Length: 260
Image 1 (cartoon, rainbow, N blue to C red):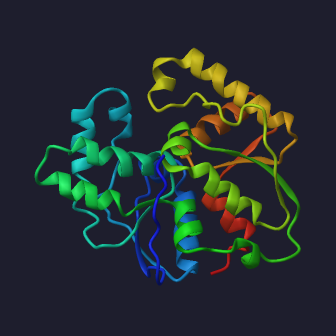
Image 2 (image 1 turned 180 degrees about the vertical axis):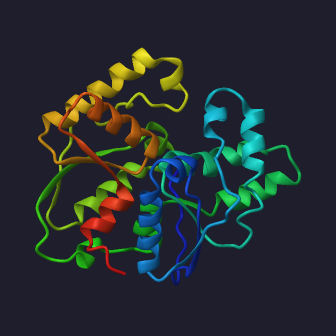
């Protein structure tokens, strides 16, 4: 991950949301809470209806042609020069780092992909470094104490630095204690199609992750990556492990009072 230069000057007033297919199909509340967080900071959030997948499943499975076709369908949906906010670090990483590579030799789509990639932000990154939100000041008093662990997907951690954004945002919240566990930097076993191709290995990895989180005595696991969140949450529920999961957007919205 390279250091990124963030825009100076007044904060933007318009933004796009790229919700990701997993948020859209499985965790729509996370998308709604992401919109509410942004709207509370004064942004008008636009949601292009034609958006679908970022192309990561095909790309990580070694099928760049299919990934290119999926990504190409998105390029003209975000035509205004507004930030594109993504409530998933791994999908944001795909759009920011890999879309330009997919279209490197395309004289038409290449410039579009590079320009769009420069406007892509993971949600926590945008809240922290562009809007400079102080959730410590925004949080209401008299909230219950809560112990949480963070999980960051492998791609999000290495390509977008998402973990450091989540740490900064969570640590600023009154009444929230973030604890670390022994397997925090390890993969949860989801890995997109990896969990389908290698279910036994994936299952062992996610059970190690759940056990390590539970060993801390935390109240819940928070993540900004829906694939991992679904994998960890479903495993914990299946095994009747005492671990609740929540998307970072919903966690931040809830802990800061949720009022616009």
